[in-house]
Amino acid sequence: MANLRDIRRRIKSVKNTAQITRAMQLVAAAKMKKAQDQALAGREYSKQLNGVLQDISESFSDATHALLEKRSGNRELVLIISTDKGLCGAINTNLAKVVRKQTSADADYVTVGRKLRVMMEKLGRTVVADFTVKDPVPFSDARAISALISKHFIAGKYDKVTVAYTRFVNTMTQVPEVVQLLPVETPTDHAEVTATNDFLFEPSPADVLSAILPLYINFRVFQALVEARASEHSARMVAMKAATDNAKKFIKELTLEYNKLRQGAITAELLEITTAMKAME
Amino acid sequence: MPLELHIVTPEKRIFSDLVDNVYLPGADGELGVLPMHTGLVTALKPGELRYAYHGTVQTLAIGSGFAEITQTKVVVLTDSALGEADIDEAHVEEAIKRAQEKLATVDHNLDAEEVAYLQGVISRSTAALHFKRKYRP
Image (tube, rainbow over all chains, first blue to last red; front, side, top):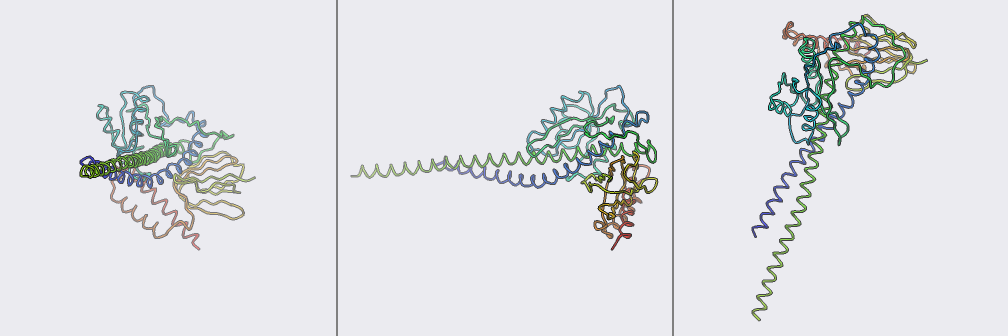
């Protein structure tokens, strides 16, 4: 009964796989909760910051800051936030598609996460810098990244900086998107526009602007990082859940087949015995 | 007419309700805000924030950041906001000491970013410590 033994072996190996994917699912679920909370908590601050920036933007038509300067060139720097590890569904592939479509082909890259860095290097693109971000995302990591890209932008090495990340919608849905970081564009998604447009600035408009803009960049990078992290863990959780479910279904099918074969073998044996008995009569 | 006050940190929304007045630690000194204040955007330095809420004065130790003031609304964006009970004195003292030790080791010319960050930690923690000692029951 070689066939029976084969099936038994397969059931065992599928069971092992299911156990592993289930463990990974549980780990991802625990991390997902934390990452999602972080991503959602940051949105409030982000909204208020956008609001403030929008309110004061009208007062700053003349007081230009280095980070606001629009240039005619099209040298682009793209900050790509992917994942370090795989087994998280299609989020890296989807992000790569969006990057290819929405950024210029000769752009340079700064990467977070091993997956897309390796891919960009394979494609022969220039990766200027690579960062590793801890889990959960500390704010200081975002500061290091934004300091580097601001420096390159102010030095005039690039005319535009964009960030490609996977925005977290909910556990089932994550949307890859490319957003312009520099030069800072006034956000327009803030619904309520304050009536007063004349603001006083303390200590001075230039001081306030040079305090707000770097903070804004830091925070945009930070928010992109936490959103990407929340997406990663959600995607991994869902992928591992699908894998576990598939494995369970597979085990069920295999068990059914195994039982059928075993019953077949028993029936055949009984048949043989009765035939032999009949022949002896 | 009451004033809308929002206090937000990157981690969470600390406070969001109607208050009677707000006192902020502005970069150029403390500033009191009543309803119908003129539009103002100010940098904040680490210090004490007070507001009158339902007849009682509430106080918070905030970190640096900035505030946007309009006639009906005050939005405070800061990197931390703690109440008296949230501050653990020994913990904060430890943080100051650690930051000072680290500040002594980093190269001030090369690592301006790190130096600014550590100085931020020190000034924020010192302000929190003063706050704690002032309001400790």
